[in-house]
Image (cartoon, rainbow, N blue to C red):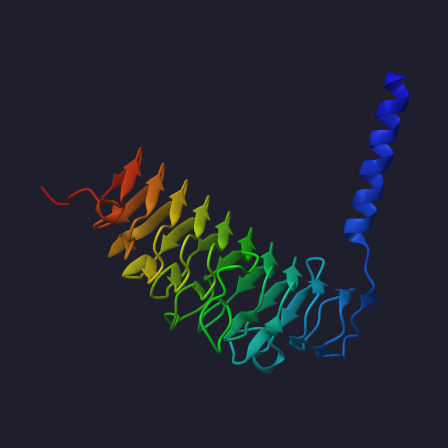
Length: 278
């Protein structure tokens, strides 16, 4: 009986795995726009951007890369993946290289950015906004921005914007993202997004940036298990953290850390740059 039960569980797992990998449409290399609901996948790297206009659309790049062709793969202009009006839109497993903005999304309820990598973006690597034409919908299913990577190495000049800009998304889940080698003006800008959850994010090896995590009209955030490690002393770790809960974060080379602004602050580690000279 136990063996049969285990076999049934194994088969169920295989079916779920197969369903997760299922793909309705392989996106042709020359197609830019997607508007019909469904799951779209890439079968190879491409030199064209992608525009999603609609709802109930999933794009799974399967770790393929969108490379900006106008600069031979170096930093350039434009947007790699653009999402407009996307409720229930998922963008996952995409690599976006050399566009000014890697992923730019105006999203509705339940949107997700999962396990994407943005390289050599000169402006703002990841931008995700809620309803751009009105106030945030407090009843909308929260957006999830999870497991993404922003790699700043390979750019000669500083970036214009923060690594991640999230606006108008109440209760957004921002978790396990990594920003490394970035030269912009901050790690995360969170605006008009109350009750957000920031968990397990890492901001590493920054050369510049005066506000690593900036809250703009975004009260009651939960800031837990995040790490900031700067190459040299920079500005504040947290700013605008109104009524935030800040637990077990590690901030290295930020002055001040900003934990004093949290309504609850427990077990955080803050290590400023040690003094130099005799």
